[in-house]
Image (spheres, rainbow over the protein chains, first blue to last red):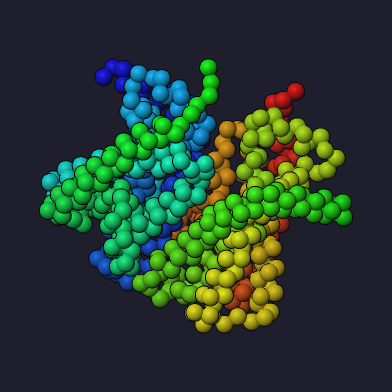
Length: 265
Length: 263
């Protein structure tokens, strides 16, 4: 355990080394939900309720989206795809006496924590200046299940991004794949719109992807859109996605290592 | 002026040759990468406005048209400046910028335009096609004179966008590691896809900060639709002139603080 804490501490130092750079990355993910929050205020000022969303609930949704994106969405695919596989840094990782997945998970967590800290700090002026009243479910069981949904989302996001990064074993350039993923993420995870405001065909499509389970469901769970029965169903679906992703991860890792070749001394 | 024009034509030719060297790969990447974002920008605005008729006084079709125009402007902008600025922090960080300063031409000109990103033309072409589709689908009336004013507005918008990007990039001279500053700029420029009224809810200081990014797209759109007032035109001209002058002066100031990382 202390070994992992030591690794965590080392990677935390690395994260804090480039605070300004990290803050800019946070700002990038912060601006989009903020703009959509403002835009929706304009839409809902005329129509008081839209598909069950009121101006207050939609404000809370986009506010939580800022925190959710910062805390839950990993960006490990860039390290795995570009640094480790394409540039050959994986050789160094393979020689370490810990599993690759565990190292990457521990290395990525300080980034999420710092980004999450920035998100919570930036939410204060938004709540103050835009007079946003935060609507969270008052049901304890719902909150506990929402926390579990968020933890599952954290793991799903990590596994999914690792799998995306592993495609670099076979593809020479994964830029286009990552861009396609970004577009799908924006459209189907709830970044652009809450899922039930999308056309029905997109809602159906989203159910068959891991995207809404990474952001939309955890955020909606905290707002109290789902009851405990629905949340338990969502959590089981998340377990299913995790199992599938873990299987794909293992397959790709074993097959990918056979393709990988590194040069060095 | 003639010398600079000749030089830029040579840069365009070299960039085109580079694009054509691996033409199939470059074309597929250009179509896929630019195409996916062009469609997403337009489609996302369609989705956001799907359940309403108008927002902040803009009709749904007009809002989608702004997204199309965004792609047209960004396509031309990226063609001219996209790649040059994406390499800027590396030039400073690795000490390659010295070579730019030693050339007998204006450093701002060369650092901004030393390479063209041909792939971006796809974005402009797709944006134009989508704009025509949207204009027809939503029956948006367009006057021929509006198209002429729109082109002039787009030129000013690109110049304003360039001035803002150049100003932000100049900070790299002091902090070369903030290479993600361009990503931040690209996020900020996407504010232009939304009507200006969206940002009136912000604190005054933030509204003033967001305004240049917002008028970049809304002013040409208003010119195209024949809705622009004298104030809109004057505002675009004045803000562009001020931004360009500030960017130029800031660059001159920053160069005095540049310390070479090479030699």
